Length: 318
Image: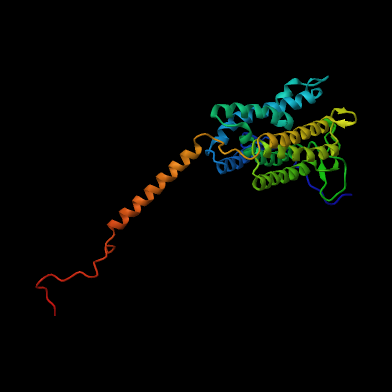
């Protein structure tokens, strides 16, 4: 009997009065906000305007959600269109089922549209948002914990995940590898790696994003190896395992080719942002100096009398 384990929540829904708050959706929403916040800080540090990341995210996030759901439904179509299945379930995103590969691919299309509208290079935007995406994935993986899904092989390790039985969906109770936790911790490590590499090597032109993609796929490959949920296989390997290999090779190839074609980092990531920041800084400095001058002139006792001032004729010399 395993005495130490990670318990699963009894339900994936918390009701705030009449409003149901689903753990899976909540994790995704929190992840998006954290990604935008971190991306905004990095964008400003690169010389961009505050708020630009959020403006482009308005395009990227919806596209990403649609892409993630499409990838899941296409690769697991039998869950929604097989015998006895209800195709309406394909739209119930809150019940789980987002493929990160589709989310990144279609999310990039949305980001490209947003960047085009702002006159911003997509690779620079991708570099700024890369570690934030990894953190968002780390948070989003806890949605699988709420839904008791995508766990690994049976284990009696002290950090095993306890899964409740559910005959309705064929779920067998027991303790399993918490692959959601493994991937969550891995994603946090990926975010730290991207931030460190970007600071040390001044990555630009999409190379910070390439580091994120390559590092993430390595972790995703071994967590896929541990998972026991139903999946399509090709040559003895899960479909997502093959996808991880191909995406890893593409990310490494992009990094190498980009480093040779456009070395260094972009000098300007958002047209006009640097000039506006300089003008705003000069305006504040001028206002500060003007205020100091007015204060000095208005305060009594700050005008020093001349040291060699002579007394007026006829003045009392006693």
